[in-house]
Image (cartoon, rainbow, N blue to C red; front, top):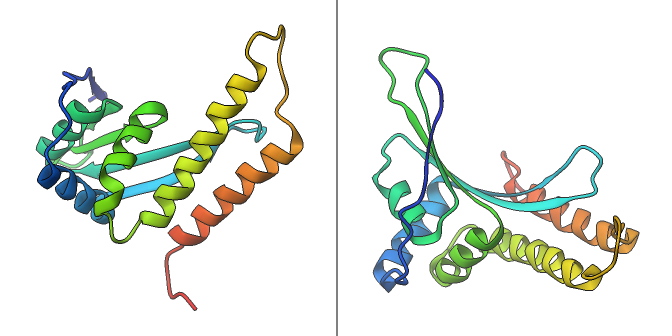
Length: 161
């Protein structure tokens, strides 16, 4: 079976505080915050992904914040399909700004992801109006790489010192 992707039925209302707290718990427990780079490390993208076999909560996140919602059919007859909700860009930013006050475990990763997002947004405004491809300065790339390494260290599994 092929993957299915759903388009959002986006809500214009901000989720209730109780719902935002619930989303924070889901992200703390089932979510993954990371910073993705393309193959030549010229682009850094903060990403939030939550995966579950029960799609109801993911549909709620999708409706509230946008992003992408996908179903990956199971390869095994006795296993449930896996559902994935991904957020980048403005969807990630809106979600994290609203749920971060309620997060307990992944707050540091969330803050670092928002810093990468802010860095990307500020650079776009800096080159706006110029013709041709504008290369991101090495100092900005080094800053983003440092943020990525901090998130990777926080996400590292196993015993911590």
